[in-house]
Amino acid sequence: MRIRHGLSQEGLAERADVSRQTVSKWETGTAHPSADSLVRLSEIFAVPVDALLKDDWAPPEETAPTVVEVPVEVLVEVPVEVPVEVPVPAPPRYRLWAVVAAVVLAAGILVGALFFQAPPEDSVPLAEAESEVIDSSAFVDVAPLIPLT
Image 1 (cartoon, rainbow, N blue to C red):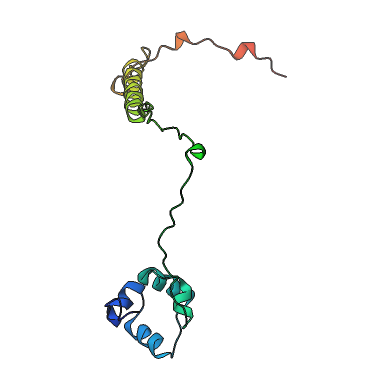
Image 2: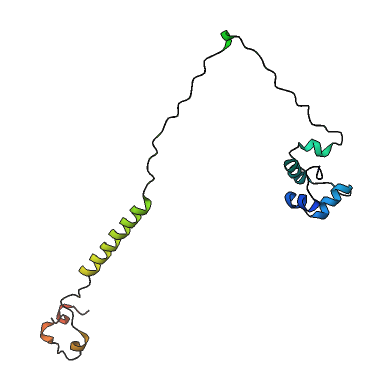
């Protein structure tokens, strides 16, 4: 079959995805093709696997198609299929929604950073705190309120 199809051993080996030595062993009968190789060979030569396994295999005789006359009464009207165009909905725009969500999130973070970054009004800078004098009269003496037991 290889020679009838005009293939060299190397060409067949390449198409069957085996080595040239493997093809040579198949032809000399020292090795037999695996099931996968038989399937590939049947596809390459366009014959059934039986043709590769049986020495006496012959292709079935091709006969001319038989023309059968059918009376007009038997003929049935076949409906003609009319192609119908079905509108395809537009794909969802996930990327657009992701960009919109990212912009809204970034705007929210920016607004939050602007409104919540001002320090509290009662804080004193560190440079001023070291030289500031604390008036102790502002503190209430709580010692007399705690009973001693």
